[in-house]
Image 1 (cartoon, rainbow, N blue to C red):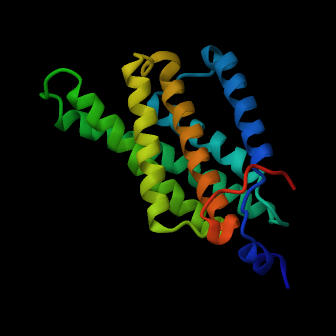
Image 2: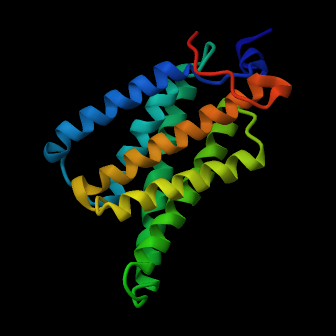
Image 3: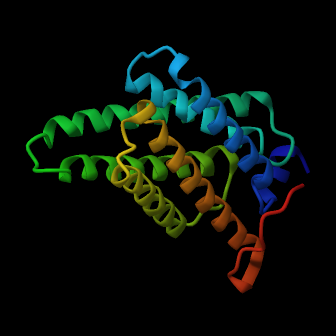
Length: 197
């Protein structure tokens, strides 16, 4: 069986302890260096956040995967992050007249949810992850709630949106781990836990 068929046959797509470890390290690193990163606007910034998140999954994917696939996945994540911000900017122009925080809440939740759904499709396409439609819906809802939590804490604009990105990273990762774990658990319907290997 070649590597691609073997990858498609696996139930666990990622080594989750490695993924969460890399994600935590990236969070600490970006938090420490964010003030020195060149500012090129929110599109470039969220493109970078998308690429960094993709790196955390690309290094944790199981099986022998060509470097080209990993790089394509990272580029796809960067593109999704940038396009999502462009959509949010356009939506903010249309919803500018809404009172209070209704407009920002609606835009942030929509962008977080659509970004999660798009990213889940990217994970399914590139890594052949068998995420059912209900997984896409619950992961999108989780990312929406995480982004709204950051808005409620008034952290949305701090560190150039870093806290929105980080909350989304972890919400999406927990959803991915959970739904991947449901497949491993078989008929029991319960995730079998985080394990390495």
